[in-house]
Length: 107
Image 1 (cartoon, rainbow, N blue to C red):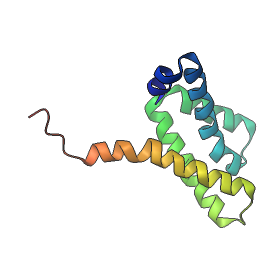
Image 2 (tube, rainbow, N blue to C red; image 1 turned 135 degrees about the horizontal axis):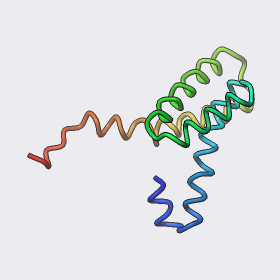
Image 3 (cartoon, one colour; image 1 turned 120 degrees about the vertical axis):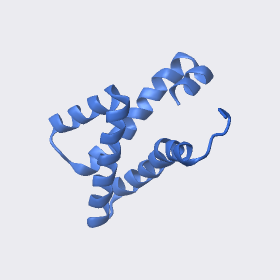
């Protein structure tokens, strides 16, 4: 995704990618309402490590989804649900689809 945005928009695409990633990081942290140090550590892990960060981000989204559905809905709940849907459509489903489809190009 970063490469596509950088090719399409140049340096602005690179900056825009990191802004979008920060928004994806803040969505579950906004719902979880944990201490600031927890938020900073989670954001550094998510942005700093590709694979472990992905696992942490999925865990945060699942934790926040459980919390959203266990409490009354407000504006932040709806914002989170939009970001959660986009996160799973962009970052979770494509790798799973690639993992479970048969690739016969190497045979």
